[in-house]
Length: 269
Ligand code: NI
Image (cartoon, rainbow, N blue to C red; front, side, top):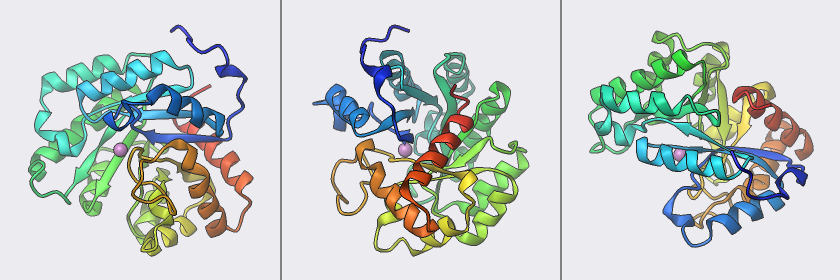
């Protein structure tokens, strides 16, 4: 993997973005400058998450171009109609790439009724989890309005401790307790700063620091006061400040712990 930016290794990042989509067309006009500016703002690294085979390939290409970018490969619940044994075989091949550090994003999304039937979403989710278990890589879980079934499948498939993260966690503090008991991780992004985020704030308060990570889901989910704008990893400090306030800790402690958790979770040396 050629490193095309000689200055990359000189920047000491403070935070790790565990869920980004820099392959998204929202970055077509200024992708490289944007990634560089996030580095300058303190981004130590980021994992770009695929949503199907094509976007997973795009994420791999970005990871090949920048030594601090990594990729996740998988099939998103809204893309579950693309699920087939052949599609899973192609994702399996991508998982052999040294910079593909996770399976995802995958999971269940019951918010958009017309995206894919629930039974197909479940079949796709289980197939993605199976890939994660086979490869020993963690799974990035997208759970929207599907809390009970998501938890049920993760338990049924016996996903090992530390091998799943609930991205943009939106469940209750009560459900968080069960996830904690399995040793699975949580990541929080801009939604934690929203005015109506009472539930997420309560959950974040109940989760031990050892299981917390930061994310953007960029270009989506920009934190307050930038809500509605295009999101980037440079906005992660706004989320970290909110988490610091919730936990009663300094923001440096949040950066330090969540970055260490991310490197451990993705097995990045
Ligand atoms: Ni996402």
